[in-house]
Length: 485
Ligand code: UD1
Ligand code: CA
Image 1 (cartoon, rainbow, N blue to C red):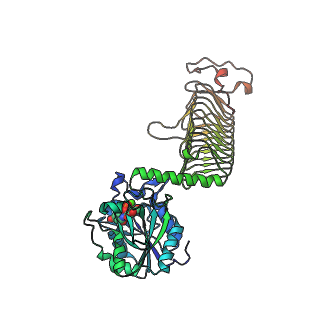
Image 2 (tube, helix red, strand yellow):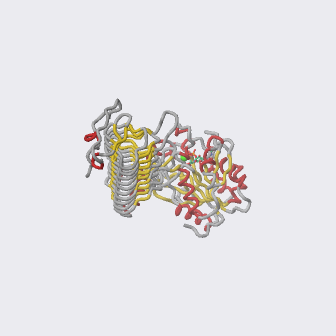
Image 3 (cartoon, rainbow, N blue to C red):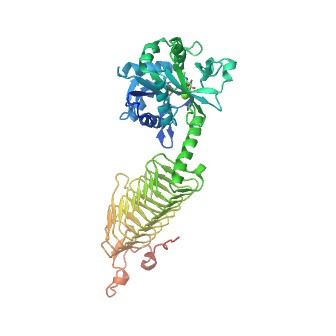
């Protein structure tokens, strides 16, 4: 990182149409590991330590101003006529006093800040008009070729693929598309760039020839092709860059003590945080701002999005979205936490359990085909097989409140709004339409209240009624067996 680059203005080119992506989304907003590619370029630019970056956009890419409005200044290029024209648009709004300009491409997202600092320092040390990055490329196709003097020392010009002669196409040294410029010189000469007779575009690399005419130095940083300077023009290159980034993210976590069983098939977004002794099985996808605590195992095929999971949990083939999971919880297989769910310590959810916008207190058990939505469920309550909160009446959503140590019998329908007091029970198949006070038993369709047998005072024969429970009380009070693994 440079400590002498205070005056540098980073300019990021992001006005191109990106037609090779064949997308309605601007190219630089396509994502790599959960972030738009432009975000990575902005990071690298900021790390160089100069001024606030200036992003060049066009009407077709105006979305970048909404996405990055707080992080950059913007210059508009009305028509994307080429990279030199884009820099001209940047100079039109750049402050007068800027002495050095660093030009970056919005579509070269893996560029490293130490290389940028080296480029800036080299140009300054040699008082060159411009400095370029030349890559010894394994696959130069489509890129600008760096043409050197016979002794190999001087950069004579950079030729675009479309404009190159067959001999020039043989050159395997290519232009990376990042440049440092003497800003005063650039301001004087940018208008002299002529459009390419082949494509009609104004090429930024054409400035090499203008600098030589002025007898100003053009210097180059030469690097091997390690993928960090690969430009992304189409979806295939997007996938290649993402693979590189994914492997480096996984590598970083493994060094910090995370076990990743199959790093090629584990998808961890850029901002995800993983504690030591987390285990990620194959096919795991961790998105957004997910955080996983120490010792937690995420089983094969799980997808976790913007969710915080505590320590020593087991998540098994499940989908968790925008939720919170405390320590020592077990989830799955095949469970779904929808946004706004909060699962207390040592709770157990599994075998097709769905939870939405609900709080489950510690020790809750919810196994076997069940749905809890817009609810609060107290400590150690057992949600029996097939039980659901009927939280939607077709027009509005309603709340369900369930106390602690409640026993919800199999196949209970809790028709919200409804409240079950501490220690309440429901019979199998009960359709609970009214509140159940603490300690009471609700049975039948619709459910009627009784005192549970254990707590019952001397048997008072109940009259037979047409509302008799659908299922007799004793077996009805049973849930399915708790699962342990
Ligand atoms: C460019 C270079 C090429 C280099 C390659 C490296 C030119 C003429 N060619 O080619 O030498 O090898 O990058 O990846 O510069 N942009 C604008 N306005 C425009 C045109 C482009 O802002 O009018 C932006 C694009 O959004 C993109 C960047 O500039 O972020 C590069 O443009 P692109 O069309 O991708 O250039 P390449 O053909 O890749
Ligand atoms: Ca490109």
